[in-house]
Structure formats: structure tokens, C-alpha cells
Amino acid sequence: MIDCRYYQQNECRSCQWLEIPYSQQLTEKQHHLKQQLISINCDGPQWLAPFQSNEQGFRNKAKMVVSGSVERPILGILKNPNDPQSSIDLCDCPLYPTHFSLIFPVLKDFIGRAGLVPYNIAKQKGELKYILLTESIAMGKLMLRFVLRTEHKLPLIRRELPKLLAKLPHLEVVSINLQPQHAAILEGEQEIFLTEQQFLPENFNDIPLFIRPQGFFQTNPKVAAGLYATAQKWVSELPIYKVWDLFCGVGGFGLHCAKALQEKWGKRIELTGIEISPSAIFAASHSAKMLGLEQVNFQSLDAASVMKNQDENRPDLVIVNPPRRGIGKELSEFLNEMQSEFILYSSCNSVTMGKDLQYLTFYKPLKIQLFDMFPQTSHYEVLVLLQRKKKS
Image 1 (spheres, rainbow, N blue to C red):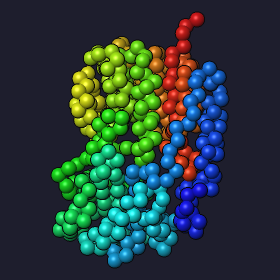
Image 2 (image 1 turned 60 degrees about the vertical axis):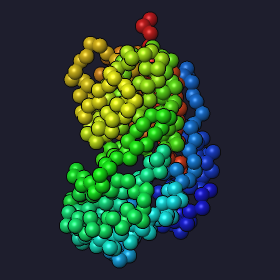
Image 3 (image 1 turned 180 degrees about the vertical axis):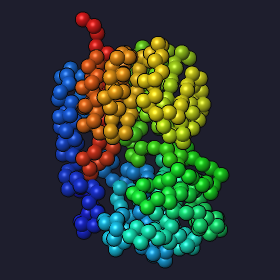
Image 4 (image 1 turned 90 degrees about the vertical axis):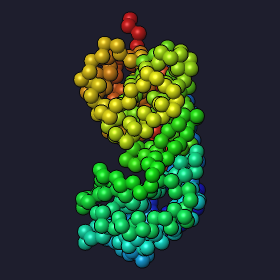
């Protein structure tokens, strides 16, 4: 069991499975996954052993609510959002890399010097709402984002920034996100960059990826790299020449698969990526250029937009990696009728995935594997490779 004083003192129970031995956590998650897929034919596919995570220190990102006072800021959580007195400082959370605990005191000092008064939800006063700290494992560089209510403190932040950069030489990207609403919304639309660099280079399995503000990126690098590598391995020997990557994010799945397929089949591979976040699409396109992939088209669109463009030259493989709500009945049925040869479904919610797979009646699962992206909790990710059933 992880030695966590926050859990032992009942200050933070985000890791609700902390007292369960890790091997038992994996058993429970595997059982839950099989229960979600019990209504489809899962006797035939290959069930691979769960991909394990480190039990602690596995996160590359800290999302800290800022409370307390400008002189003594608290970085962590609010057990009761309307009660500033319920704040818990989580700077020593064992889920973060140990060196994060050395960075947080420097950030607290900067908050005081820049006069960033923590936002008080009950009084609807103050400026600083969140601090988001992200690390590139490959480069050892950091990205820091301050979520503020207004731009009022921007001159002071700019004045104090050189001192912060001197104290934290690995700090590569610093930005201000403006979130003026009095609502439980993490970030707003406007991002103000304070450094020339606007993204962090990352690298999984020799695939260059980029972490940008307002672009989703997995928070468990070891397991994410394993997830992408597995997808790459599963499709690398299949006769696939055209790929759609829906909900593609920064392109992790599509780029891994396209690179392997291009090495196998040559320059004929076509990749189309669809993602609603322009920031993520920018990062994905940059990665494709670095890899030298020529027939690649990443577009900032809603994934449902593919249903409006009935392309007769259907893809051989459709990759879907939706948010927790799944892809839904309409898109599932569209993919079912389009009848691509393969579907690679990555899910962070096996319940909605199980429902989606029930609509995909023309497909059978070939391989299934659980990826423990979120140890100490009941959450996990799963990867399923589906093949179109042969007509009898």
C-alpha cells in the first residue's frame, strides 16, 4: 500500500482503492471489463493480460486548485467548493513525481510576488483559480499554466517571470489561461503565452508528440506509451492502406499506426485524423511532418462530421478514442454500415464502449486488453481490435 498521509488522515480520498492490493485491483478491473462485454461474443477473441502501471509517481501532470491567501497559497483540492476553509494542500501527493514537491514551493513564492490572490468561490473574488503543471518525460521540460479570472495581474506576472525562469530552468512553456466564469470549468478559451515556446516535445516509442495548452494528453506516460505501442503492433501486419483516426487528439494512435504501416507497405498509407481541438490538430500535424508522413490530413472537426461525407473510398481501419460518453448509437451505426475491414476502439469507459459494441453487429472482437492508466482507482482504459464478420 502507498504511504499517503492525505489518505490516512482522511483529507483526500481520490484514490479510493488505495487499501486494495495492486494485484487485486487489476483482477477487479478485468472482471468489470468482462462484465461490460458479456452481451457480445467475447469467447473467441484473445484476452491479453492487463498492462500494469507504476503504483505511484506515475502522473506527468498536476492540476491544483489554488486557495488560501496570497501570502500563504494552498495548492491542492477543496473538499467543499464553497468553503475555502476546506482546502487541502497536496504538494506531497505520492502520485506525482517526487521532484514536483520541490517545484511547488517556488510556485507559491511566485504567487505572492506577483500578487495573485487565490479565487474565493463563495465571495466570487480573487484572480488565481488553478495551476496546471505538466512534464515531458522524454525531454525533462515543464509547462506551467495559470488559470486566472482576468488579465489585471498580467503586468506583475511579466515582471516576476524572469526570476521564476531562473529558479526553474526546466520551465519551457508558461501561459495564462483566462476563465472569467463563476462556474466549475477548468479553463477558458483564451490562452496568453508568456514564453516564446508554446508546446512541450514528447516522445513515445520513437514517435514525436507535442503537449500543448488546451490539447488533451494522457497523464500516465508509461501506460500511454504501452497503449500506443500495442495498437501499432496489432495493426502493423494487417493489409491496411487507408486509416481514419476519429477523436485523434495529438495523433498518438494514428501516427503510431501509420508509421508502422508505411514501413510495412510503403508510401501508400493514407491517414485522416479528426479532432475538435485546433490545438491538438496543430500538434498532430507537426508530428506528422517530423515523421515524414506524406499522405496525412488532420482536421479540426467534430468526429460526427465524417457521417456527412460519404466517401466511397472507405478506410480499411477506423480508430476511435472517444471521451467517456463513447461514440454513441448514430456514429456506431454509421461505422457498422460503412463496413471498414477493421475498427480499433480505445476507451476510458468500458460501460459506454460495451453499449457501442452492441450496435456494431457486423463486427467481432479479435483482441482485448486492459491498460491500467489510473491505479488506485476503479478507472482504466481498454483497447479492442474488431474485424468485420465474413458474410455467410
